[in-house]
Length: 99
Image (cartoon, rainbow, N blue to C red; front, top):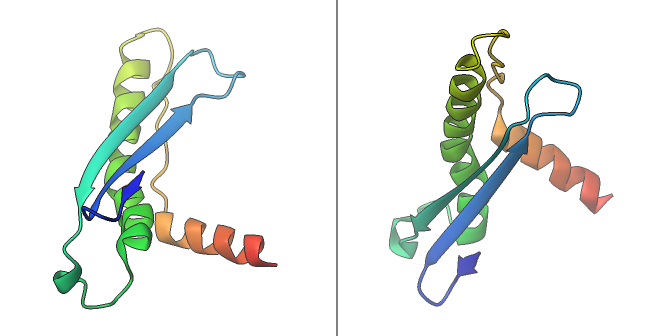
């Protein structure tokens, strides 16, 4: 959710462990972000900064939560999500949508 009139944004990421795993885990995390236009030297804008940087900030928390929850089961090997380049994935997705 982008509140352009106040330069604030909220970003929610969801992750669900696929059904073929022995875990039933779904994680939703929301981050609140503030944007100061004068400090945006690149001119990228609120939406792009929140989408890319906000996702990159929140994803490690999802990784940690999933790892901790699945590790507490003590019956299966914990699920460790890989690190990913959020910016590259969003850029590729954007290119595919524009085609």
